[in-house]
Length: 391
Image (cartoon, rainbow, N blue to C red; front, side, top):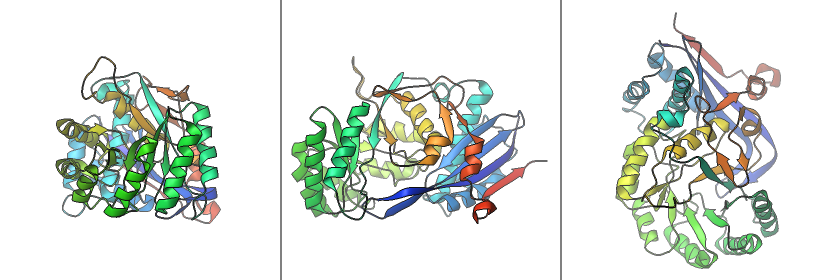
């Protein structure tokens, strides 16, 4: 048994309305996905998080080292990819390329063995996961409390037990927005805030102290991910749990994050930090430090499915009679790629998602949607697809 082909696609969805967060504007959603095929005819799909064209180039760089390998030997293939890149890319988009291929290999392995990925990871520790709604971005480069509160109420009416809003444009406006949203949704729904590292330490302390009274479930990326000691200091100056890690790569980066006692909640992005193979290792390190793992997820249904199987397998730390909440991020912004590219029986219903036992990652790819969003000569762009076949 061997891997015979790897195909990568850059997909783009132009948004009807741009949205903003503390760093810049989103006018489109763009991802790189990868299709890995074995000589058995089975196919696995993966996704990379980050600049899609650069991830595609990384996949093309790695492809010659993966073609011909045994598709069930995920650890061996991961090690090959890592060794081929570590001299010049111990973090960043090449790790995202490794992640995309690794996720595809887990999906492929599950389809070959006719088992769900959560079984292959070691077993399903929970049957359901609670998604929290990620949204409440800004509609322009200003802050609009009324729009944010209406969106929050909409999520509450859909049954979400938690939701995350953006902060980071202006401290006073942030305080007013958090107050408005909390009053709109009431006290029983968990509310998270995410600054996307917009603030310095002084500002982050000021904001955290001001919004503590609104029962914030966590404060995500309050300051630059480069400043581990400042994260650690911030944790001593607020009762709000501090979350971060979407900008970290590999178990080695997360070891630094955890050893510095920077966060209460660690957030690896499976499609960027090293794939499912590395996410398992990151979770093991986090358990040593007693730090909760809630993965960052931003992309298509492929990324969401990978995160759900990962969370289904996570240990409850500490163990207890009634298990704590198992959250997963569930992006709600406009995204045709997320809505159309995949179909799955893991759907949001009454505040929960039931984990699928379908082989692989539990989704099917709609190839009509794939070619609809693939960049092509028909819309004035070059088709971004690569196929390499072992002969």
